[in-house]
Length: 197
Image (cartoon, rainbow, N blue to C red; front, side, top):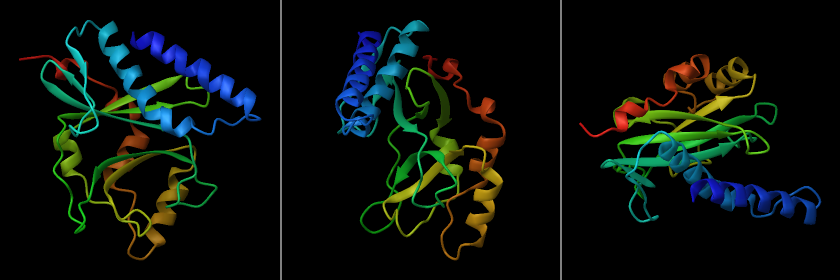
């Protein structure tokens, strides 16, 4: 089911681009759902039988052997927090409440889906709840609801670090973000962590 769903979304995206001169006006709206299907499909291919898709009200997207999994999906984009010549994939890891305090994280693991332009190719990365909670808080006046965020830069990490360090008050690149960019293979999913003990 998940594999057919992914294929259908890719066909739909292609058709929309043909209709709207190379653009799909609802591409962003279906991107998150596509990422969830990609991860669920990967899990099922690996032999996880108990993959349950959850709704938007639970604080996580998938349940796998009683582990709560959040899925976040990004394609390469120009982030408001950085200059236009600093494209990156970006994922919100935790949000703030109305008072500006980080909300409780309700997932055990977060899986980041890094999509290439055509969405056929992607990479998956995984962080535990403990790893997220150990990260420094992010702050950018344009993203007041974001408590923690992580980026993967497209050939401009050092330039983005320098830019982030020069800004007063705002801080978007954490030590974990730098480590993630320099050693992405360290964050490839360890699916064994999702197995029941």
